[in-house]
Amino acid sequence: MNNIKYLALILIFFISCSNPTEPDNFNYAPKSYSDTTSVYVQGLNKIISPLSGTDPELNDFDLSPLDYLGNVRIVGLGEATHGTKEFIQMKFRIFKFLVERYNFKIFAFEADMGESVYIDRYITNGIGNLRTLMINKMHFWTWRTEEVYTLLEWMRNYNIGKSEDQMIHYLGVDCQYFDDQPDLILEYFKQTDPTIKNHIISIMDTIKTIAKLPYNQFKNYFINMNQKQESNLIFLLQSAINEMESRKDKLTAKSSEFEYANIKQLFRNIQQAVEVYYNYERKSNSTYRDKYMAENAEWMTKLFGSNTKIALWAHNFHIGNNISSMGSILKNDLIDDYQIISFSFSEGSFQAIGVEGLNYTGLKKQTITTIPIKNSINYYLFNARYNNFILRIKDIPQDSQLYQFAYEPHKFLSIGSVYNGNPDNYYSSKRLKHFTDVIINIDFTNAAIVIPKF
Image 1 (cartoon, rainbow, N blue to C red):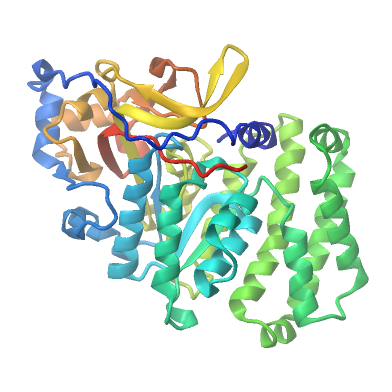
Image 2 (tube, one colour; image 1 turned 90 degrees about the vertical axis):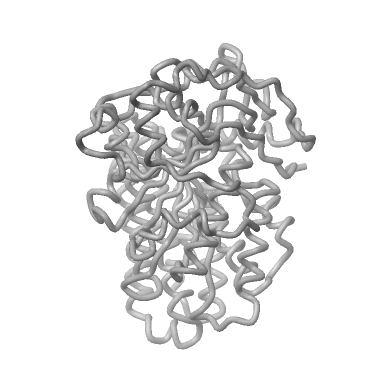
């Protein structure tokens, strides 16, 4: 999801489209065994570790190659499409593994920070109905699925009976919306400090007014905003942050350190969204979103002490070490304390918005039933000995031809929210050794089951 509100509106519009629940039954293209003699495939076969499956109920013995992640601060969990059942299930498996074995504390999603507060309240305190919250609060269909529902229910059940310091949390790193933030902020001050200064109420009223503008008016608001107006709005939000900091002792005494930090970051999140939209409309810089998602992820690593460990859910592009991506920023800042797990597949189904020419055709199950492009990264992964496996890039021997292959640019399949029916259009050049630390390959996939919006 590299576009912002424009694409978001398209996603919302098509939410009520087809919602397949039947199991997939394809005539998959067979593995091209004539190519298994490739030195690259032979090299892969020596170092890949088989997976027993993606079901989160499976024993975690096959995840032992990921034990080394136990002491890192952030583990990025990618996806090669936004709508693949097995990717969601596998990320659930890995998060469960990291929580139960290594005390990971937060599952941070490529989701709106404001909406995520409501989901976290359910996970920690059982407030609300999860399915209703997912329908009413989640802005994107991409995690409003039955598979994510199962994950969130597990997180809720994990927390039951645990003290606050033992609980796990669901938080959002994204900065594309700010419609929930004002009400959450005002609710907090009403409960903790009713004497809140009028200028904070005024600021929140302004933000709510902007957030509720119809699409074209919202777009025009930022098109017409000049630099002084943008700076003034950022300054007003900063004054509210400063006000919070001056009252920290009083506020935390009537809430908690976690609530205080979360509400304070919501102010910052609004600042981020304003800058994202302001710069997007001017085409001056399209990397603000990833920059701020990285900032929010790093903020979370200090939320429950200086060594808070988090898993970070986003598309392969965002978590990967790509130019100007969230992952590249985290890699630069944290080095080995940020580890990237990318996902790959070859054939199967997934959810995505169809597109024919310039026309969107709705959210629906998409299929790929052809083998990957020859000599692509996916092609060699497809021809490896196992259908489902873990590949740790660091295990590639330095004196091997596979190591040289990993340093060279090769095509890699990656699909976002939109798909035009031709997989060849969704390959981009990647240097395997550079953009990821681990690949989890699932050869044959199924579409996630989207929970209908209406």
